[in-house]
Image (cartoon, rainbow, N blue to C red; front, side):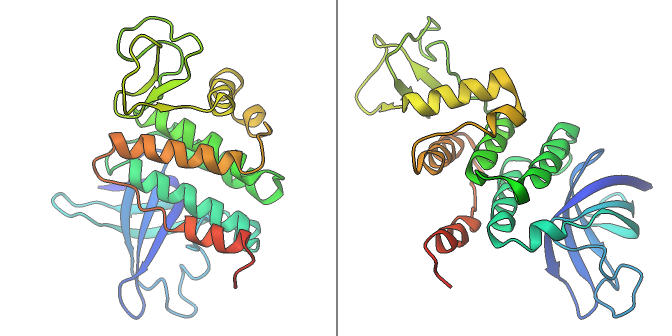
Length: 251
């Protein structure tokens, strides 16, 4: 079977002297793994088309029982040059790619995830608050993955939570004062309001929200802890270390 779909290149692994294995997130097929034979061969037809974070319309062949599709054609529609030329924007985009790889498995088609990545990749190079873009994107990913945080009604009794500020990652969100128990945590009012803004106003508006210094990193870590409580496969967010080094002037 032959399939053609636009996709984002989220991971590249060298398979042989001339070939790559790619992890793509596509509009029509969701997450797919593809072998690109001859992709590293100088002068080959795929040369310069399969860079990390680029947007490519791919044509692949799929055979029943095989885990890898085979790339037969590729057309570049977004080079991703601006992302890759800015170390901080690149690291944030890689972090979002790692979130996608951790939350969405193969065979789960979602044009919403594909479009979300495209919007984030387009905004990151010029954004003055890249952590805001990342946090808005992650909040949307959690919703799309079926792990939406409950921010209005108590997850234990179903009644309006009021202003208790108590929270349970394991149970899925906000708690009322009557249901709070030892071991539950407190959600920052700023983070709670940010999540409400994400739900109410959409991607572009929420990505321009301001929090206190370090607030978006705190928000990201909060959502990471929430995701880890609900995602058995785990999250491997190696780009966090790169971002920390960049922000601390290391390297």
